[in-house]
Amino acid sequence: MSSFRIRPRFAHTLEQDLDRARDRILAGLAAQAPHDFDVKSFPGMICLHFTGERKKFWSPRLALALTAMPEGHTLVEGTYGPDTEVWSIFLYGYLLVGTAGLFAGIFGCAQLLTEAHPWGFWVLGTMAFAAVLLYLFAQFGQKLGAWQTFQLHLAYQSAVGRPTEIE
Image (cartoon, rainbow, N blue to C red):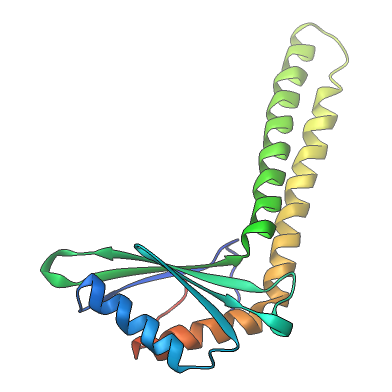
């Protein structure tokens, strides 16, 4: 269940129309330990995550996107990731580091062209190091939540009655 992706995912097709596939997944998840998971259903999406004492800062959630396909089939795309609050921290961290790194690189090039001391490249290097640290923290959190990710995956596989491989 280890992946170098920040958000591991899978995709497969169910041979049922969208409404029947959605009902099948929801019924299968509800039949399992209902006190362990919280299932939220939205149009075209189902979210599954841990609740209560089992929910930790690094606990993953499974977001299932359901898309109607031709011939009455349904494409299910699952994405494992942290809860929205944690994902926002990483998203804004990458945004801040990337933006600061971009401007520092541009500023460093301008300093080189004007024959000034290019200290902007030091900031660029610091931002690259910060991006690597963010990635390593994401991997560390993913390793802490690996067992719970595995449990979410087993719950989904049990709900649809077939194995799926995580990419």
